[in-house]
Image 1: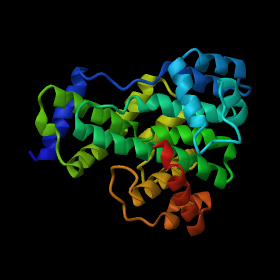
Image 2: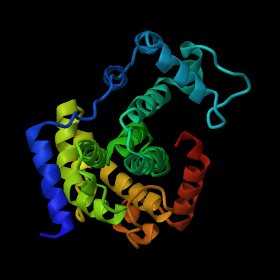
Image 3: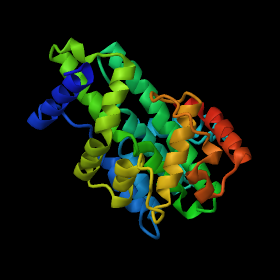
Image 4: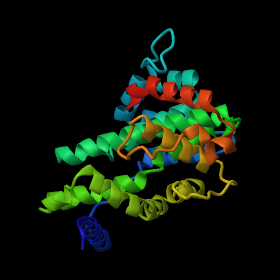
Length: 279
């Protein structure tokens, strides 16, 4: 049995025993997503949910006053942030803030990989929202953001298991990134899908997590070609942990489905560079 097979077996055995604490989906972020999914979200409910958490409020205001969002004057309250950015964008920021807490390890090697995975996830979220707007699907732009942020949650799951194994004395699990990428490529779709089900998130996001590497995608779920394309672009520019696939994004079937050309892909790459402060 080669190293990849040995480590894969070790990871699956650990998952089967239930010894590893699963990544959690923040309760406030979940309630906020549920409110935002309504046809007419209640701003007062959204404001109250965020304001009741001082730490979350502080982090939201910090991002809202950053160079990416900043207006003529600083925003100093949650209400001002909602007024300037809109409820949907505030929801996106809260999702970013709360999800980042899952990307933590006490092991320096695992933490570095998690940091790179986090950058990839944020890049895919920002890029997916941009692509949705660019290709005429602006009504799905915030769903695209969420799908982009969560699409590789299975890799986070696997890294969490690896982190647990390292802490329990299995130093051999700290294999080179090339080896870990092969393991994650094999495991992250099925385990990511199961985690999304545990989190009870909408099926449209579960499908993206499960199917974003399929060669033939369901054209009924437009989020899939969006996420596949943005994932490819992020890997191409070195944003993440997976190697460049070698595909030319603007020549792929996903680009054709979305009606995007080489100029659009170049603009997307610039957008990702401009948003790097969020990483």
